[in-house]
Image (cartoon, rainbow, N blue to C red; front, top):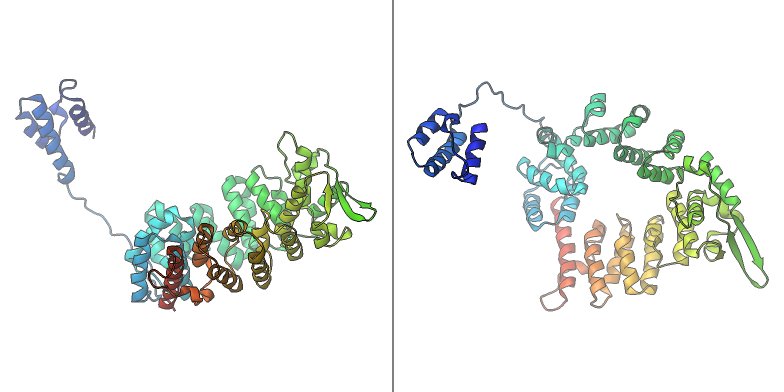
Length: 480
């Protein structure tokens, strides 16, 4: 390799600046080069000969054992029509539809032909949401590929491995898959392994593992979650704050109620509505131990108050009025939007439908409206959004639709499609309609909007919506 590097340097720099020494070249290449007397000619001939030597001048390897074959996959292949559809999806660069297609294939118990897996794995390298469904449909062949190509290591998670070796020695994706499986199959064992390894995990891994634990949260996890409130990583503390809110009678919640009680009062006014008065809390080191850390600078008192309101159990407010009454009250001390946003954070953490509904009605165009709608029951989501489509201006409604948590229930999907059908041509409507066409559930794909209009009868964006809905409907039929 040194001789090759010297030769390349000589050719690039030129023989006036550097002289080629043929003695370092392989014997056959040296013989060819030494027949030339002109230095430049000698260098170029040597480069040409050495290039061929490097490509074909090596002895064949011997004693190489073939790789063991992947474990047999007995699942049926996808139908022929679905194979053609997959080729179209990959060439059309529609990753959101590839994700839906893969999830449907996994749900139906099909497998993808092995020759398609490399292209899908390359797509999943840059789009993380494709990895889990691809790992499911690729099965043992995908795991085999992932073991041999580090860039496809996420496919190894498809293997149904619950051994301790996978947890102790596996790559990040494999360990995450192990924890997810064992939390469902043997939760006591999973919790024991997680607690033992917790202190040695990097911050991003701790955050991922804690979020996974949150999907299987049990009463016995409260001490673990409370301990995570004091984690050194902000991302872990935020997840812990969200999870601790699901324990309404926790010791953490009682501490927050005690702090909040000293900050809130109601002042009654003659012939006028009551006012909620807030007093910012003083600095307290115990807040840091509870995961509440406020950056230095102006407004620290308001920031501490915001964090305490967001962390306190919402049952604290029952003595001051109903959620609807409180959401409409006047506020003194911090700005009204600070209090409402703090209540919204608490409602999201504690999944409180009554508070979520009250806050949406109090401020339909608020920053947290879309997330709060996600807390409501499917029927109430549809009813609430239907009401908002009649009251919000198109700009605010478009922002809301783009932020609505997915997946959407069928009733909400129908409401949104009906709204699109009744709108005039508008840039923002077209933007929202493109998302709606891709996000509505399968049950909504028979909507009249799925009938593609004839050329010239509709704006391009309407045709695009119809084509997306129609495409998705046919895609699901092929996999039925």
